Length: 366
Ligand SMILES: [Mn+2]
Image (cartoon, rainbow, N blue to C red; front, side, top):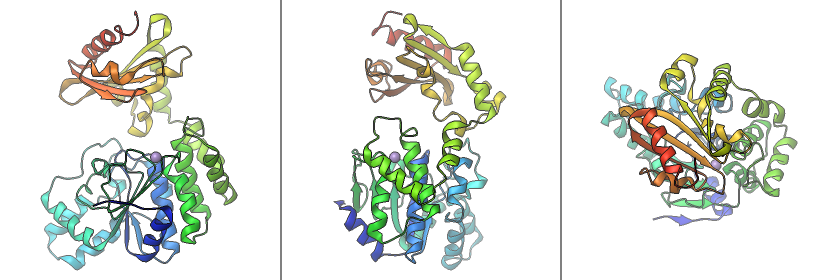
């Protein structure tokens, strides 16, 4: 059973309990990471034990904000109390991997060892589990799928009620924006480390205050962070101004090779696996590349093609409001939202290119 709670009730729950494990979502972004880090520090400021679950998909970009907060050391300690067998020690290491042991390109679960799941039920019984920015249990991080959440703090209208208590507020551009309201209710001061984490959350979920989700409240949250000493310039530079050289080379390649159709309304790009290997690209480099074609003036339908498992071609589509990406991808058995959708077809990138051009040609003459 799930109950919707006010922010004040969420604060009372957090003050009343202890020994927290905080979960970020799968394919973590700045909002989930920044919110988890800020909440963890806030709970510690109240004298609570609090740890961030070491999501195996955390990428190096976020490491500075998670320093000292990850639960792998604590999990190893719990294991020693729970059992002495070397097998169990092995399973804990798999279930709660150190983030620095995981390749950043990994999308695989750390282990499918059933003992790892057992170990998590032990851990689960000891923790009060809080989620930040998670809309559905399917998005629990790898290794934590079987945990049950005691409180979900979120800003998705689609939050599906997986937690015992849920506070979700769609009016907030970021989960981190919501947390700037939670801190005073907890009686926790907005310190510089908390402000840095929350500024990462709010700035990244709004494309540095450019997206349609930005409100006056978003700027107020950012102003609070700036007043508390957040490194606004440094964070903006890392997340919005600079890129790794492999990414720059990828953009050069895409710029050279981009195909245009329908008088420049449609742009098609492809990133074969061989290019990813050749340029040394990581997921940090390419997680937002699907919309690259739309950075060109006049483009309203951007297509990005990649290779996925089983020799399939993966299509990512980004559309401006004049077109419906979900409807176009539905013709190929895919789906998504009007602005962003996807589909996969057999036959790799060449077949995917042909299929998506055919599907788009039903909307606009190519
Ligand atoms: Mn978010």
